[in-house]
Length: 162
Image (cartoon, rainbow, N blue to C red; front, side, top):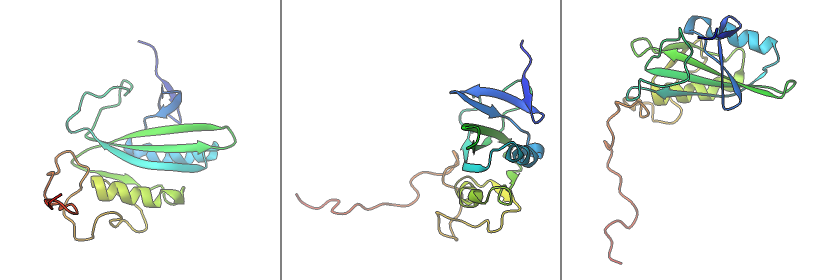
């Protein structure tokens, strides 16, 4: 088996022509800070995936244990004309990750969306409140164990004679 390359001390892979880093939760913020020093000055997106029903995913390097949730961050370096992705494994029993807000203020809304839809909290976020769902909403709609169809939807002119 070939050795896994490391960058900022974490495993590096390639997917679809992009570099992908796989930092553990504890090193996540430090890796992003190092990448910022390297020229990755724009956070394009923060999103998440719930692998509850698909635990056998591919693309993880040896030594990176899959968890139920994966937070995916996309960074851009204008100087290098390079896009880079981070895939951070977040366990179901403790879905918490450091916020990138102080390093990348553009992460403010996407972190709130991940919190709202998946229930992954971002420690140190300045306003971790719901952004898409009403404040009194119970649950996180993009979790795979979230009950579908709990709210009846009535479409305009449904059942009306034609």
